[in-house]
Image 1: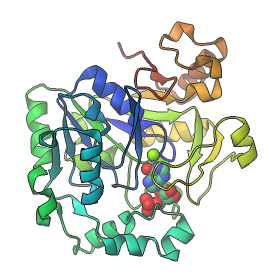
Image 2: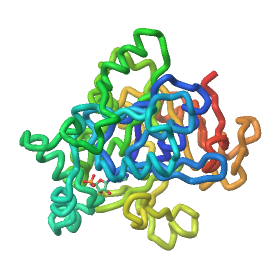
Image 3: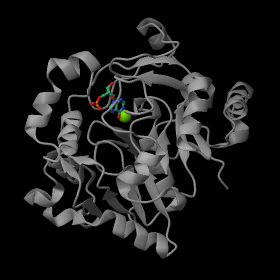
Amino acid sequence: MVVGGFFGDEGKGKIVSYISYHDKPAIVARGGVGPNAGHTVTFRGKQYKLRQLPSGFVNETSRLLIGPGVLINPNILLKEIRETGVNPKRVGVDYQCGIIEDTHIKRDQKEDLKGRLGTTGTGCGPANADRALRILKLARDVDQLKEFLTDVPGELHEAIDNGEEVLIEGTQGTFLSLYHGTYPYVTSKDVTASAICSDVGIGPKYVKDVLIVFKAYVTRVGAGPLPGELSEEEAEKRGWLEIATVTGRKRRAAPFNFELARRAVKLNSATMIAITKLDRVYPDTYGVRDFDKLSDEAIEFVRRVEKEVGVPVKIISTGPDIMDTIDLRY
Ligand code: IMP
Ligand code: MG
């Protein structure tokens, strides 16, 4: 399972696509909130921004599932299937996924949500509210999704029982969790590893490893506290000024936060760490694929993360392409 350790946008899309390509899991299943998340995948010179489809699409043998805890905007899902060119037969949507309709998007874009909290305006909060009220439409009620409908927990358990590898893709980040984050500046659900398990319908005992993704610096979009926040000018100078995938907003930035990282590891019972965008902090590491070729300074940072957080760093990303990766898992 892959989860986000900060405020989302840690680079989970890159990590999930790399692992999928390398490990060739039978299934890649997506958990998390819904199309408020944007996972960026750079593969064979092309960039994809995925808000619904699992980032594991790059491995052609993986089945691509979306768990019942995840909200679906059918138009966005269908568009991504077209744009990635995946065979629609590979895609499965659980019967019980909640459906985002125009009314949810309208409600989300109203002042109290988008204005006060800086939500993504994608309808996720209002749709989850309707789900709690038990009035939300489910995927099984939507004609557009008919050909994709499946029992996602059933498929996952069949694969697990057959000894096949399964990769679960979490979205958002630990401190956007409705329970563990910086409430009220959070998303509309828990998004830690336990919630991601529940989203796809597997219990915690089936999870062999929880890989938590930390970017080498911290970013956040929307309102809410960001310890050590830099001015926009300083973020730009350091090359840390990013543009949000879903909303096009500028992301706020801060240096790596060891205290948050320690807490995130606990909340997710993470067993390994991935560090992304190391090259944005140590430019001489750009594109490096061999740990021994990292600069001393960069290695020192990686060692410090391990020491202060207490979990080994197993994957390091040094560039956007899925192959710009150092894999220390084996
Ligand atoms: P909502 O999830 O659209 O309701 O937005 C609530 C808060 O979570 C806002 O600050 C959003 O910017 C943030 N958020 C939700 N999903 C993501 C994500 O995938 N990456 C980064 N921030 C997110
Ligand atoms: Mg994102």
